[in-house]
Image: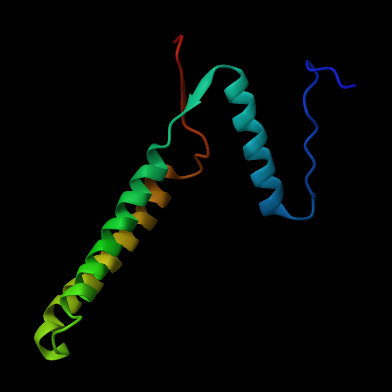
Length: 111
C-alpha cells in the first residue's frame, strides 16, 4: 500500500528533452493545483481565436467559390489567403513576444 501523503513518482527519459520538459511541466501543473492555484488558459484561448479566424476566412472562400468560376472569386481567394497568413503570423508573434517561455498562468482564490 502506498501512503497518500507521499508524492507520486514521475518517470521521464533524460535523453529526450521534449518529453522531459513536458513531464516536468505536467508535474508542476499538478503541484500548483494541489497548492490551490487555478490555471488560466488565456494564451491558449488567444491562439485558438486567431487560428479559427484564419480558418473561417478560408472556409468562407471555399463556400463562396463552390459554385462560381475561379475568375469571379479570385479576389476573395487573395483576401482569404492573406488573412490566413496574417492570422498565422500573428499567432507566431503572440507566442514569441507575449507568451514567451510561460508554461503556466494561474491564480489563487485566497490571494
